[in-house]
Image 1 (tube, rainbow over the protein chains, first blue to last red):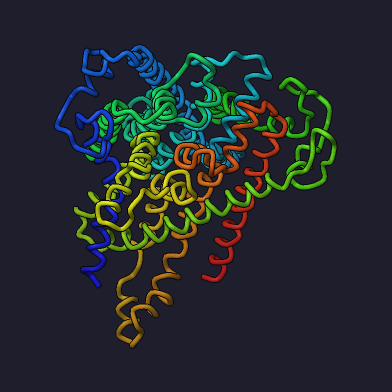
Image 2: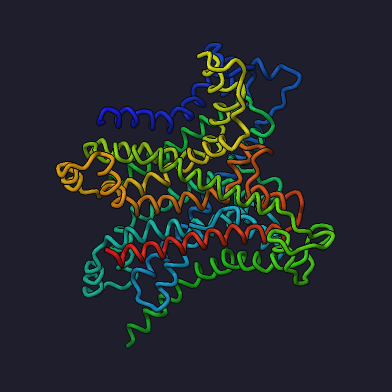
Length: 269
Length: 295
């Protein structure tokens, strides 16, 4: 029984990781027609996405999409960084207010802040689209940022709240008793102790914003393609080997960010 | 008195910006969507500001005008989405449960590593993960090449653009959602209870059904709810892996907004999804209350 379970466990991890590893493997396959047949190791697909000359670029049907890719990366980073900044500040403020002040609406806040997290993203996407058009706001990078913040504030709120719940209130009280102003107490006592939660929430917001497809799809308008939408567009035009290379690079990036999060968490313990 | 006054002011100043932001940009849009679902679609896209219940009538059965006619296909697509979401939840449970059980019996250091490895794909771009499945399932893909190599089939089978592909894709994407709540409840399982049950002569199956399953039910329910909600309204997985053949309610909503340009009808369809989600959450709440009362 035990051996059967271990065997299953290995199969489970194979199911989880094999598809991803397949993409990485194919990104180095020289065969331009059939990815399934190994035709030797190549870095051509990586050279191709960075606009360098390869065997494919000489063909007459080749269209250089490097500028679009660069633009998509730029839009994605701008959106994700701005979104992370706004939602981290707002989420942290809300978490502090709900945890540290006793007020009548605290329970309501806690409940309502759960709503964005369980809202199906297509519903939020179309609701935002209708809203922006109705109030006459042009779809732009700004609308993408607003759209991402509406649900990422909740993620930061939850992460910081979890951290606040583990903290000892008496340290803050001691600081106030010893004559520190509320701002001093916040800066010297509260903020350092919630820092891991704030950073964890911010990192989560960054990753989700970088990866969001559905909400961005509805409110991006034309000319503000983010990286996931760019890849989706490429996919719809046909399966090409260079998608493997872009996917692999994106994969490396997400794993690096996730590992950074884990590292920060382990250091603060 | 003074101190508490200042506290209230601090609080108001703190809450003002985020509260205003969420009221305007989260609850505002939802409200407008509800309003739109009761308006008349304009002839050239856009919307006429006159009340209409026919958007719901088209879905549920009472609309019979020339342009707004009841068509059972909408309800049928909705039911099919419910079915696909339910099947996704079922596969997620079946795939994750033994794995969560296996990991919960590991030594602590390895356990943490294993949990990290299960959740890591959640951080990997969704579109990359779905692309991987396109490579596996398409006619010249990995799975077909493997099956033909083994001589199990002489020509490629159609995996891509089927219900099967959509369920596999959604299962793959939502495994972390199911795994974590499952693991949390399995880890709390008291192994002495299992031993007692076995010592008293229960078979493995009886022990599982009478001891293990009831104790881990909260995890199964929690995981099922948070897997079901994003599955039901999903439109990326069916558009990448289901193509035009597997249309879910999410694809239907998308069409109303980006090609048919009938926003009121699209809003009504979205309200249908919201209603289903709400019913599910209420049922979960009620279930949690009754189990609490029993305990």
